[in-house]
Length: 381
Image (cartoon, rainbow, N blue to C red; front, side, top):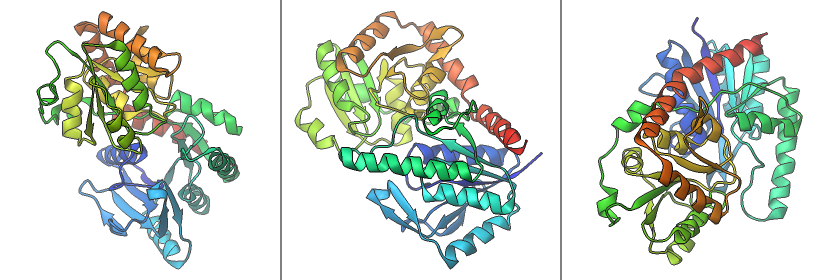
């Protein structure tokens, strides 16, 4: 049976981020399955108010103010917002998915579901407190905001799910108990197929036989790029860290760049695929994740991962009694170095093939749609 979904998400493409990419891929997969999809998000100056994507997904951008570089979009309520929501309801929406707990779009989506009397699932993408990295006073205020907004979500009757098992467990912090998981996913074959073929080893003068340790993510303290650079220094000759991404730590990393590290900036998907194809290890000393897409991308190429026990790590790396990498006890540089050395010494081509098969078959978009449908079946009950 086909459905018409409205997916409420604080940001959407062309704004790039994990939630945005997840939303776009999930919407595309739902359309392939014969469903209708409308994404309701916050307005941006670089995107039209209403558009229909090439795959048939309709996008409606509600009046908004973008604060903190887009990290905090605030909806502007009024007649235009009501008119756009009315246009969405006219599509015959019968299921509403809300991404994250703490934005105005979350509350708006749940109210919209209540007014239409249709089931709503709220999918949380976090597994730790939100932080803007600007001091304890601001973080304390943000934490209070999270509690307040989550309580509003609960009062509006949402059925909660997590993007990973860690995310679902984290919801208990707010008194929400759920076992529902709607996991992140990847089209592994398509990701491998879009590789640009760019030769990073030659371009970055990585010695023959050298161990390329890839990092993909924001160059921000919560992701730990500086910790990886220190870990590679501890590992010594024969190990080179290649860091792909941009962020607030870029200047500091450039000033302190050791001989065993390279910064390549933000990469498009084609170059990112090429980089991971040439990597020996993927390492992300991150503080927390909902379900890290980069883990899936590394897994699609069969690259072992060294990562703390964050969201998505166990789903990606643990399968049928095997761990395809190292899930570390903490994110300290010495711990990361130990994990990188251990997996480099024990990894085999057979392990690589098994990891690729696991990601391709078990962490696919059809599997995620199946989990989404199960969540809505529970919400409807």
